[in-house]
Each structure stands twice: as structure tokens, then as C-alpha cells.
Length: 291
Length: 284
Image (cartoon, rainbow over the protein chains, first blue to last red):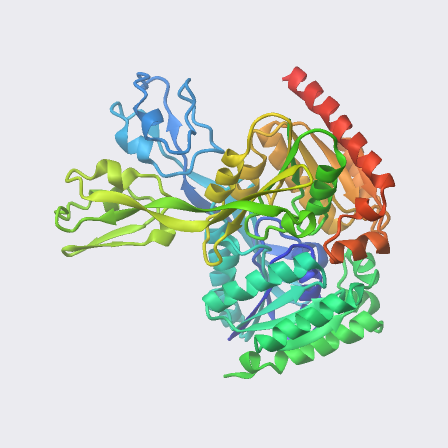
């Protein structure tokens, strides 16, 4: 089974728009949305949710005022300053370490496990999809990403699909690390801006750290052709395949407004043509060809 | 006053707004780039960095001479960062949140703390704008402690602008918490709207007054404006999609330099925010 994870470092370079178009081009694949924090792939794929499951994160400290004597031990031990002088725990500030629970001499602190999101198994017009919704202001995004990817693999096996397309989150932190490990290859979608280049370099470094082969796609390449040339040079210097250049095209936004992928909206346009070439090039990279 | 600039969705223009606002306002201003996973503000402000320090988070170090394998450290650790196997103790520093529970619970005094590198913090300035950012070490998962370190490094007084990371989970909360106003930058597209709604919910939980900047205001549809009206969210600025703005961004230039008429608009934006933040604080 192969898993292509789509990353970018910088947000807004076109990860989700490209992932959705690739789902149309792939001849049977499983879609996995690993951006559990601000998931958008469902807006293009309109999944029919078949199964919803609560995601249990860590615990959160809750002080029982009946049992609390106000000794202040918990405040002394809490490194997150999450317990106020009135002995009420700030749920947002609580790290879930439970140290206060263990040290409270009155055993006045409970530690209920929080439900901090939901994950879904769905059907879409391009195949099954596994996705999730982390609760607002919650932690444990990396754990939820790992769970979603594990479920995606299991479902792909059950359905006899040998390709998983994983739409990754922006950045290089916890949820991105959880998205990358063990993937067949990472496609980094970048844009020819100084920030796009800066963030691409960090995303490449992250993939190297986790030994995942990288390929590069330049989106909106005509916005700044000098910067696009710089990206190509960086890719060549790093021995990374460039799988394509996609022009800036307002049709991406118009397609999004209609809840469609670009290929479904304007498949015959120049961006559509480029996307087909990019997909063909992705499937011909050494990492994706390897058995 | 502290204004955090956030968005939910990435790539909507947080850094564009934060940097252009920083160079447009009069009076002392400091810009904190709290998007430590992918800090970009320095590419536009181009500050001279005067100070660099490594930021660490405490992780346990076990003295096996003193350890009697009682396993209390393993039992207290909710993050599975310590395992006692036979007569040896393994620590997994990358899983450690630095709560200090193991250190506190060890009856033998066998645990001390050392630092795990989170990344660097850099302090600088450019044309009167004080600048601080964090740069997460690539491979490091935990950004909130570095974000908090950036915020702790700022000085009180004057205007502080925080360029927040995208999303709605712990890193954004660390960047927005205890700020006086959240300026949400969005774009009028289905992705922009969907993620804006999530960001608005996060700001509501923190109970901070907020307003919107609509970037690339003439693309997409009207759903963001309809949502803002229904929610009573003030639209404080609209920036059109303009090839000149997009190209200056691509080169790492702040567009107010080439289009100075926008400086007045950003100054007015800051004044508007000041009024709204004071009104919000008054209502609390």
C-alpha cells in the first residue's frame, strides 16, 4: 500500500485543492484528511458520514470544592499556572499532566478523560474518506492525526485500495510530524513567494528527518517566475523531483465556491491540464514506483 | 495594548496584516511572530537580530545510582515518557511535557532536569519596530512552550502585535490568550469561511473582543460578509486581490511601502481596534 502525504509548510499554498483534484485522477484511492485542526477537504468532497466515533484525549483536572481545603499544594505543583487563587482549574491552560491530582493531600481533584474531537469514516464520489474534527482549543492533535492515519490504512486494506492520499496540516510541529512518519512519499506544494520558499525548506528538512522521500510542486508558479526558478534550483540541488508547475488560476476559487474540484469544474483549462501532468509525474517518481 | 492576528486557515494574510500594521502605526510598537513552526514576519520586516537564545523545556535525567526502580515516576507520567524496565529506566524526552511530576514524586531524589532544545528565540529591531520571533527546531513537536517564551520576552506598554499560527488548537491558543483584541484575517471563500467560524469559536472561548480583515476581498462569494453580519463581527478592513500586492508579497515587500495610501488605512485600523478593545474591556 502506498501513502502520499501532501504538505506545504506554509498554509494556503493549495494543498487541499490539489489533493481533491488528485483524488479525481487516482483510479480508486482512500482519502485521509490529516488537518484535523482546520479541515477543509470535506468542503470539496461532501462526504457521506457512515460512522462517527468520539476521540478521547487526555484528562483534565477538576477540583471538587467540597473536598478542597484550599491548602495551595496544587497551585505550587502546577507548572502551567492553570489553577486560579479560587481553586478553579482553567481548562484551556490545563496541560493534563495530573500532577496536582497525585499530590492533593485531600484527594479533592478528579481527572476525567476529555472527549476532544470526533473522527469519521465516510464515502465520497472518489472513494472512502477518513477525517476528523478536533474540538476547538483542544490539545492532542498529533494523537488524533495518528489515529486517523491508522484508521485510513485499516480501511484501505479492507476495501482493497492500494493508495492513500493524505491531506496534511501546515507547519512542521506536532500534527505534521504525526502526518509524515511512515508515508511512502511527501508532496510539498509550495508557491513562489519568499515565505513559500522559506517554509518549504523547513518542510523538506522535516521529511528528511523522518526519512520520507520528497517531491515538489510549484503552485501559482507564474506569480513570480524568478522565485519559481529559485525553487527549481533548490529542488535540483537537493536531488528532489519537481512534479510540476501549476499556474495561478481564479478557477480554483470558483470551483471551491461550487464545492467541486478544479478538474470537475474546469478540467479542460490550462490548470486542469497541468494537474493531470503533475499527477502522472507523481506516479512516476522513484518513491511511488518502488514496490 | 496587545493585538493578536489570527485566522484559522493558513495563507489568508496574517503576516501581511501584522507587518504592514507594525510599520504604519505611530508610537512604540513591537511585533512578536508566534508562528514558530513557520515564522515569516522577519522576511518582510527584515530586522537586524541583536540577540539569539536557545529555548529549552525541562526533561528528566535519572541517576541510576540512586534509583531503586520503585516505578513511581513511571506511574505519575501521563505522557508515557518514562519506562522502568528491569533495573534500568528509559526516558523518552520527545514525549515529555515538562510537568515535573517525576521529579516531585521520586522518593530517592534520583531525578534531576536537563533541557531539551525547542528552538531559538531571536530579538531584533527595524526602523523603530521591536521584533521577537521563535523558530521551532525542525523535528520538535511542541510549539506552545516556545510561543510562551516569545511572549514572555516582550516588554509591557505601547502596542504589541502578535502574528499567530494557523489552526484552532493549542499553539493558536498560546498566541491569543490574554491579548486585548483578536484581529481575524480571512478570505471570502468556502475554506476561509469554514476556518473563520472555527477561529471565532476559539476566540469566544477566550472571551476576547474581535474583528475581521477580509483579504482578497473581491474573490469568492459573499458568505463571509453574511456570516460576519449575522455574528455581529465588525469588518475593519478589506484588502482587494491586487496583482501588485500579491507580487510585492512574493518578493518579501510590505505593500504599504509601494502603496503609501494604505498606511493611513492601517493607522485607522489600529485606532478602530483600540476603541473596540476598550469598549470590550468596559463590557467585561
